[in-house]
Amino acid sequence: MSTPIHYGKQQIDQDDVQAVVDTLNSAFLTQGPQVAQFERSLANYVGCKHAIACSNGTAALHLACLALAVEQGDIVWTSAISFVASANCALYCGASISFIDIDTNTGNISLTALANKLQHAEKTNSLPKAIVVVHLAGNSCDMQAIHKLCHPLGIKIIEDACHALGASYQGAKVGCGKYSDCCVFSFHPVKSITSAEGGMITTNDSSLAKRLKQLASHGITKESQDLQQPGQPQWYYEQQSLGYNYRLSDLQAALGLSQLAKLDTFIERRQQIFNNYQEAFNTHKLSLLKQNEEGESAHHLVVILIPNNQRDAVYQQLADKKIHCQLHYMPIYRQPFHRISDAEIETFSGAEQYFSSALSLPVYPDLSHQQQQRVIESLLEIVNE
Image 1: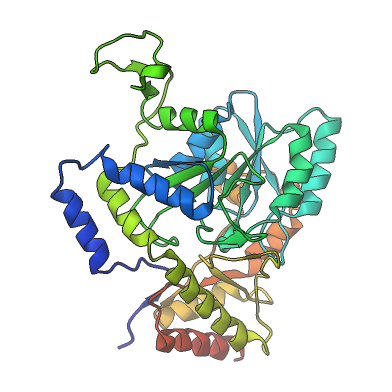
Image 2: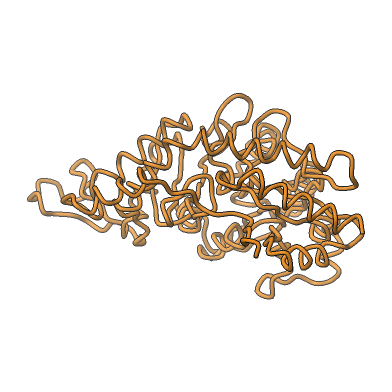
């Protein structure tokens, strides 16, 4: 009987297990040295000044919006194709959300759609406070172009790089902060590395980093230079704002640190898997999402576009062979909570075309050559019937 193959999963080795065990045997399970070390190590890896750990990628997006003062009456824009967290983070702050159509070649925000939407928003005095830019599948958006469009209008830029840790753009790692106010990562088990659950926000803005850190820990500070009532005993702390308990534990940070040391190896293996898929499908009527020529993808996902509205049938036939693929994603505006009118849906031609054809194939570091060949052969057999 064939072993099931899933679209993604974590790769944990004995070094990871030992790192967690060592922390279990240490003096701290939370708010200890591992979190600070994980923050420093990740900041060094992506090449930014500050990294702030938190409990998950959704919490990171929420904190980013909060720290950038997104509030009631504001508007936030994001890609029509993403996980719902990319939109929900604005709603948590009382803002409204609006969607941008995508480029069907890449799955990322369409620069044409963004430029047209900005032009209309300027005329109607409805510019967004912030834009959440999603690097779908680990492939960086054209951040220089997005920055050029948004920055002169005073729009804050949040990179949703939950798929893109380890990716690069214009020779620098995604998360370096050259073209954004902050960048958000996720360490869910199917991502580039895992801390079981966890998130991180990177930024080069020191004041923003301070706000993020305080908001992630109940709005509390213990730093003597930041206290409103100086000269207090060592035990003293102040809640200075309404924050959240979005902290990462030392156990999770220990796992994240161990995984971070293997990140480049993981990305190299994902690239090999992507190349194998690309070579296998080159001569067939199947295409993968195009990669940004100015960067290298983290290949969190390998998205293939199935023609002729066959996607759901192909999905089911693969599942019958115990090959479990997934759709990333149904347009957010089609979710019942976010539902827009049918007339509005018609304006999202790129997202709708993507939605009808996209399928995420298995990709993770320990996917074997034999397993990948099984996926390739099964898919070609189905589509060529």
